[in-house]
Length: 140
Image (cartoon, rainbow, N blue to C red; front, side, top):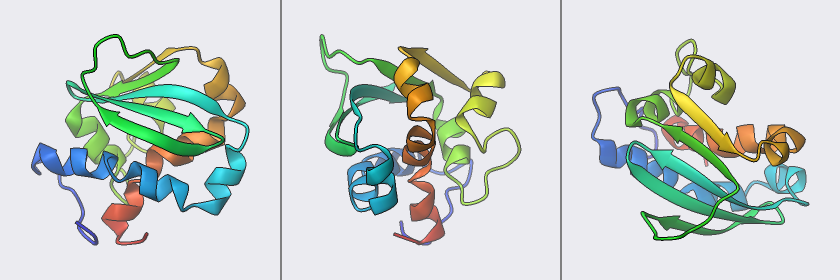
């Protein structure tokens, strides 16, 4: 997948493959780990109808589980259609797909739950969610 741009008509499994590389992308990014060093939180990232449960401990992704998992709790959720994530993860996203708040305003994403950790660690979450763009760029 490295060096390949995901086009809007691409197989949806490519999008899921990108999210499954999130622990490697985040846990090897020193700047991102420093930014989230005080953050411990369970997050839900939903791509289409597939939930991913992300456990963050001291800024590191300690666990990423593909769901659905019965009775799995989370404090903060980011939900969007496959195509919205696909466009968000392009190296140079189109207008209105470049930022999680732009996507939410356009009705492409839903941000739910306790937004306090999101606002207190805003740059961390923006960089964490955008990390799969590096796969499309061919940069690790």
